[in-house]
Image 1: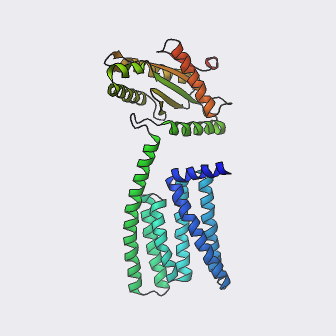
Image 2: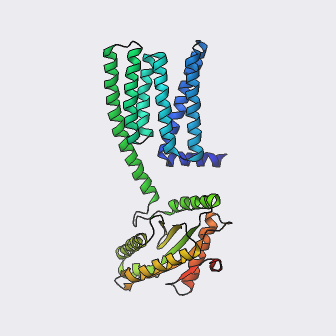
Length: 336
């Protein structure tokens, strides 16, 4: 139980949109549920039913977001549901419903993309004004409502854009190696889990190449860490620029890197390894001359979890280094 709580807390802290959906849905469900109870006691059954439907929708979207992780679509559905709820309350209760429009506008900009939120808010405002006028609200209250909605929209849009940019920047810092720009070990583990799940579900083959710069410590010792850093950056640039668009590149630690290749068989994995190996031979240099790399590879297997898969690639790399370095060894070559 404690482990599940820690995992949920970690997801909540790491996923910006999931945390927003949670912080919106739970308080809103509690508040609207309270109104449902009050209205049922007061005998207003139609409004109570509307409130209960909104509570069910909010909780359903929240559960869907946590179970699937598909928060982008969930956010769009959420603001559609809340928008319809606001209009329903305006139609049934008049002025009271207009207060909920402010909450809905803020949620729209934080929970859905701007290209969706802007027209949605415009439509919501226009429909609210029409329903408000039909409910008998005067011109001045309606103008005040439209003006304040406009101000809130501009503020919410600006703040949501800035918050999203900061969240993306923090996520980048948390998942990228600051020196080379490659994904870090945390990002690698997440991608390996995704690849395992994809293989179990759709049998999509994925390969791993572990790359290790030969005698890299000597470069640092002889020419300094600044030149060693330049070699690492150049190495990362070469590998990424000579990989396919869908392949993912990570720094595993020190001078070790991992290339994750999507939809590839063992022959394709070997071809990619030989290509990268030759590119490094041809273009990677330091003050002492050319720099080479050793490569170990492994194709995903049915009995793998991500740790075993990574370990098999690492063992292949160890054999490549034991064979004199500047060479390639693939795990399970008999499968080719």
